[in-house]
Image (cartoon, rainbow, N blue to C red; front, top):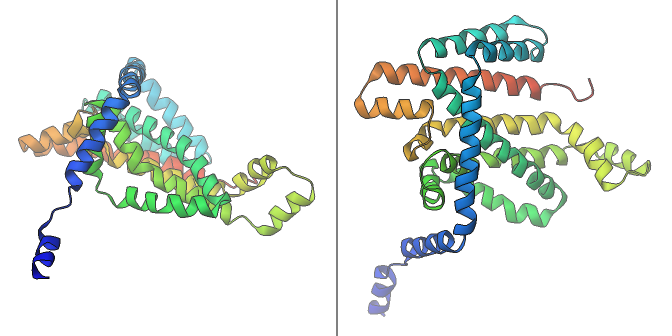
Length: 287
């Protein structure tokens, strides 16, 4: 009996070996999928970054200021902060790094929204789907962000593409959860009224449920964008360009000044994006 207990406690379950084998199998079997994504998607992101960099900074600053002005209800506070913050980043010589960071965050956030909203809708319509997907979301949110770099590098090598992949996994859950929550919180009276008028399932979803859940969904999108931005420094560890790479380089060289300026650029970008998405989330869909 004692020998059996010793075997039970001393026998190591080969989790690490099994995970490595599974990852290697995925990499080999789906190389036909991963390689084109790395090549073409990476080229698309590089093209996007280079196109934005080719635009004079003052034009982008003016456009952002105008968007901030009208989005905030023709108030100058957000527009003024956006102008000053972006000018400061350009003044410090980090404009190209800012564009790279913005490209990574925008693409990762967009993919998270495109994937997350339909999954959230599915969860709101099916208790079975909700029961299956919820533990997956819990796993995605509790796993340390650094761990997502491992499969990202295994599948896509180094660069911006694996950075987007890691950010996508890390940032998608809030959009899924808030979409599910927003639709489930829609008043039953409104649902019954739409059904009484003969609305189809699609009409009920797109004309009643999604508009009424807009504020909640936008709150989830806000969290998704912020999480994607929080991955900037972490993604720089696998070669993703941008302000995060400058922070990492400064950390490795113990260069406090450079690290502070690059970090300040991330903070300014985070505040601008956060205010934009928060303002959009507070818009009443009935206005």
